[in-house]
Figure 1: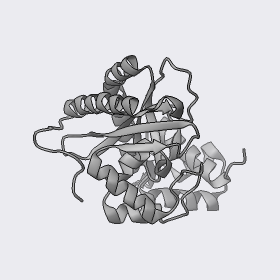
Figure 2: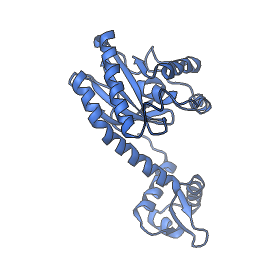
Figure 3: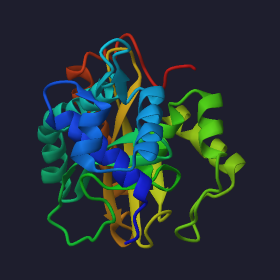
Figure 4: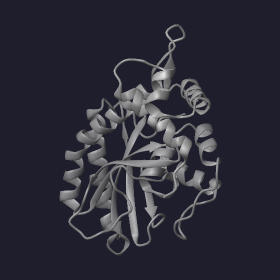
Length: 261
């Protein structure tokens, strides 16, 4: 696979700043990586402007910036969330025999942070760490539905919505109608929108503020997904997500549904 040289170099700088305990001078970085000085100046300036690196104006030494700290904390939160979620996910899997997934939002994509495979044979595109287009998945639509309207619109209109099957919603207005329905009923459905022959039900996981911080889903082959199965799946999934949300400080008595934004 072709890689972008500048992206590789930025990552190498971040890895160097991560590995060294002491702040580094420009000369230290240039010597360790061997990059041309002119391009290194530009790369470091970009990292400093974006907050991924910091430059001490007096000592003229570089360290990791606040964005690296934020990313690290975000990763740790996802790991902690996955650990908390697993027992709840396993109970749903044991009751239904189907695959249960947990995802968080990253821009226009949902990222899977936990997955419990079902006993039924089912090949899914999801895997822990994998990113899928949020508009085409059940978990993704749950996560998108909770974003402030202006933020969501800007995010989704930045580039065309990709089609994966004939059922994928690629018209932004139609997708917004679907997300309004998700907010109203408190769950999302993926009707073969990412993978033919697979349907999905997803529900929000909320923190103490009522904000949707993750989405939990169950995926079922369309051939097995009759109304009785759908109702049972939604009930068990909702109970699991409610229990997980409660462990994160959310109170069903004080907050319900999506937070108005």
